[in-house]
Figure 1 (tube, rainbow, N blue to C red):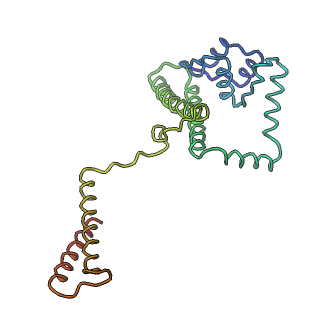
Figure 2 (figure 1 turned 90 degrees about the horizontal axis):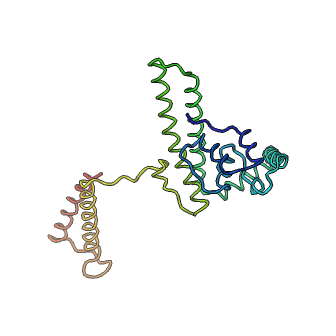
Figure 3 (figure 1 turned 120 degrees about the horizontal axis):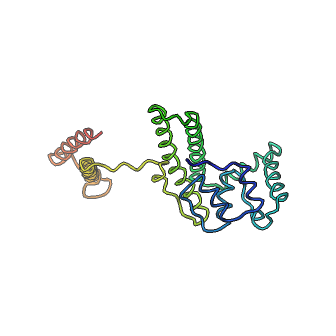
Length: 239
């Protein structure tokens, strides 16, 4: 059973960051994760603990300095309301709408997973069939949410690190455009042909032989008007 490392554990690790111990912390949360550098480990652990990553965490791994940096970041988040709103507006202007949607969905799914994890823990370790079944339901939910959360996180990271525009359809944040059925395609083609034929006949009636010279009344005009009326009826059937 994976256990998310606490914020205190991550802060303690940041006091003396080391690759192997950092990997152990990460694998408690994501068993299959395998970042290649100490910096990547630190970035991901800070993300889990909701601590803004700073390069100083790696260059000055002294206990008091790390603790002071974390505390100063927390204090800066609680400054005056007007300053907070100004920062929020500035960030909103610089953040693409699709990234805002990804971040919002990530937070929502993360909350759902935390709730499912808590409900699974509340079941306890009883091995009766009902308890086992209930734990499995929550475990399956947690696994499914974890896959989605990981995909959202990777999409955001790919955008900021590699300028890759996320596939919002693959992430489940946009619907795939409907593909017309063969019957609908045929109907659209027929409708288009009728409209084009109507336009040609209308032009013929209004610009007979010379521009702005209506076709005179007679058998030819009445024949054209009759077929145009039939086309109108056909076009109404498509609506």
